[in-house]
Length: 240
Ligand code: GLP
Image (cartoon, rainbow, N blue to C red; front, side, top):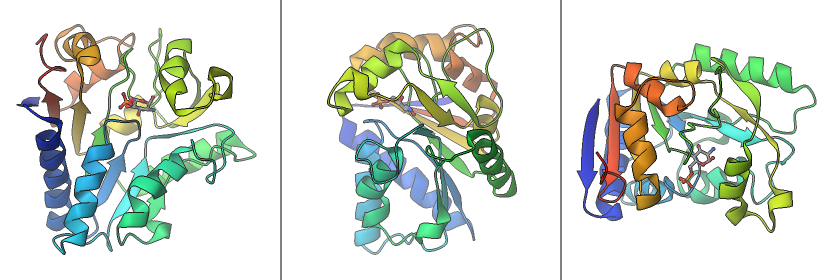
């Protein structure tokens, strides 16, 4: 596990965008695993900047997002499909049919999960971008006695719904379920890039990176992966 700390958020974002760019340039048909939340926003801005500057093309890129809320259609402002289109896809030259997110309004969610997992298996992820939940979740893999390996439906923890309520009008509006790639699907990525910012994540960063490997801290399973790049701002890394 390689840990890099940055003095400013801007430096972290630029570094992460460059890692993505290098991956894209080094492959004929690159596959990126993408994340949502507030952490990747600056990274997506920088990736779009590289595209605008003519330094990067997304024409041959395929993407898979980690997760989606159950019950929110793609045109709902808080859906992750909407987020991705607003913050990245609409700003770059990626063909729409090369972008993949779980469909949170599929009639048969089990079938949706199996289909998503099959697509992932056919197009292994070169680099997976990850954020970190305050309770150690990755994607929407919540802490528990057990974890699911594959893409599945998950019931969101009250603390996760609360943390994400800032994006909704009220806590009641936050969906109770989500579809997420499993920890196994995430760990299959060739390289994992975990980006974490802010003092409020310092304790969970320490637990996840240096504590015991346990399903109670899903991100601790990243310690088992051979190629993990951790990008931290000064505050997120201050307890290491
Ligand atoms: C959500 C997402 C995660 C993300 C986490 C942290 O729950 N499902 O993929 O990593 O939030 O978000 P933030 O970066 O806003 O702290």
